[in-house]
Length: 480
Image (tube, rainbow, N blue to C red; front, side, top):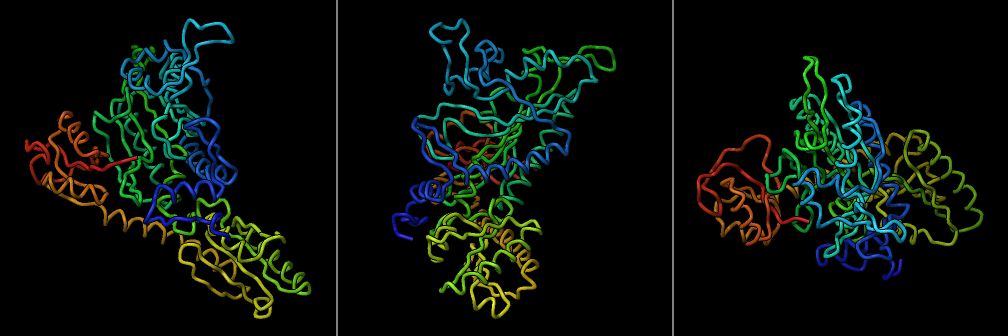
């Protein structure tokens, strides 16, 4: 593969350019004709479909159903929850006209669906018998990201799912928050092979309008944190202004408790960054739309037919066992070209079959994560392929987990805190709990509190910045 087609920079030397090249050259996405927007190409969309299928299956198993709400939201709806409105106004795209006629009530292009959904919820919910209401929406949202954009990570429009549930009590809402966070963690660690830290956001950084926010945070190879998914208990902050109430078993009227939660195509960007190498994308087998690419190798026309027959038969066997197999039978490209192209696309496993493989009754397998070449007996191809893909999935997770652990440090000194930040990673330290101190740390260092662990950790010093009595052990990092 020629240099201008392959990845031309090294991950360790120019991380940002390396990432952009993988996104475009691996055929995941392209830049759109409007600043801040991108086109999700078929290969990238197929990865999103794998993520979507996982979430969809897991939440439906827990009783959730999918619905859809309009993309345009009246400004009067947004204003019903003051904190929510003030938090989103800087990011909102507004529709001000219908044709040539000005609108009396501006319409926001959906930055998130709380307000448009909860207007309907107030009409749907009347009795305790209507609860819980467990809905999820698959859609896109628009938030004006003009200053800094990065494909998948920060764009003005992105695909996601957003769950919006209604419950009778705070305890039920609390359980919902943690149930969803557990599903997200399973997706990230078991499917995407990305280890995450779990905890809650500070009041300064929680979702606007929420009672509290829980989060899953990952660490990227450049040392920056990435918020992977969040789950919020909204309390009664929306049910009161929107009139979402029910008559309970006690025959009294009560305001409901609500949750919202979401994960986006940002997860694709995380997988690119965490697992990719200097040759391109490296996809964990569980999320790869093509798990195995089969490439025929022959040198004469006489060899062509038996090689193709064998590769079709082997591919069919693997397909019948549930593996996602693609046979690259393009005649216009050499095997070497195909090897490089599929390595750039991150396909986990390559099968090569040539005349000598047929003669020896074997197949040759090449792992994308280690580039190990493995010859296995033809009759063991299904069994051994499954074992290799499982080992690859574990290897990618353990590799990323080792990096996370190595880049998570502890300090009680603000000077050391600032030095550690230059090397990137999470920094565990003590914090006084004051939002003003938190804001000053952000202003002075560019780092913020990514999470407070769910299980309270032992305090080991004064507040890292102000020296006051500590309230929490917090995990700081610079972030995307």
